[in-house]
Image 1 (tube, one colour):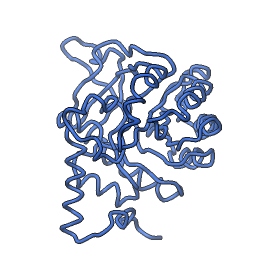
Image 2: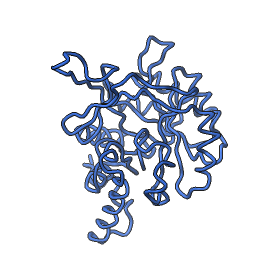
Image 3: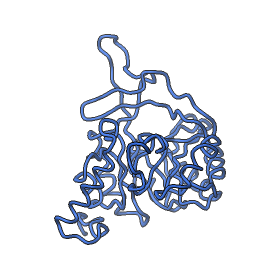
Image 4: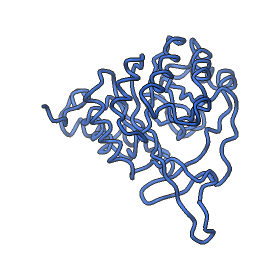
Length: 288
């Protein structure tokens, strides 16, 4: 899959790639109303990674339904809409709006957003708030519900169990890590928003261990995400327990990264004489 925020709406790449080869496309984060995003600068390179503070710039859910979904409806590959809200009510309204919309195959719920009604704490920061969002979405949609968890918590396994109990059909692990950079010449933070989300190869070991841990305690599929750049990375996540993977930051300097990973996986299966990639899911887990 392509990770949210790294492949636009997929439509932008139609002249470059055959998007039908992808397992799924996850569009950029979508909010109830259009958003302009955070002040510039929004991106900063770090060693083996990227800081971003885009601020969920997007066209809003109604424009997505009117302009993007009709195009997706004609594709072979499913499109999953990543949704983000500032309150539980907004998440529910987004999910309700997208239900039964041709071209929308599933929802990926971004719970790394601040709850403006609860002092700004992230929805994903506690099992209770994460479950509340998941339950609200589950009640108003017939679409599959995937919850994308934040790693910026004390015990992500407890949160994973809470959202599954609340009705999540699958989990995406992980969203970005919080980070920042400082310009020593200007003597101020590099990003206009001060802090941002760290992604790229630097976060891969963190994401991998989260997938390994959570896949051992939940019964729903886990989607691995975080620093995957090639087929070897993808295979590590699958062997740790991921059913699927998302390619994100790697696509910025190599737009064909997701397709290269797919090709690499095919070559690996042939070389290793493996008939079904599903046989690799969780194979590296230590049985206790």
